[in-house]
Length: 116
Image (cartoon, rainbow, N blue to C red; front, side, top):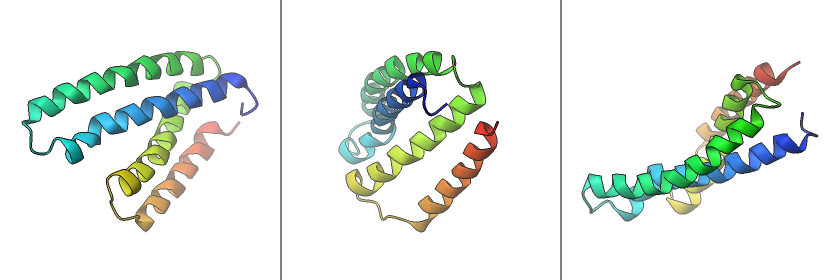
């Protein structure tokens, strides 16, 4: 599966969609904390539109070579891989060992979902 261009195309689109999703969900905590929640929600929804414009095609393309469960676990791995640098570098949160433990748990999920 890793040698199939469709897998990598799906992964690339999911990474991009996760970047938008992470900023939509958490970016307002840094930049709009002093604004009413509904303004943050409207801005987040506008950012999330771009996430969906990437997520939906990624899932449609990926579903041609992966099961639904494989797509979901791939999404979770990408989410953690995008979230940790975002939290540490952009939001200036401390790097925690818990991220490593979470990643190890996801590796177990990857093994069980992607094994032949």
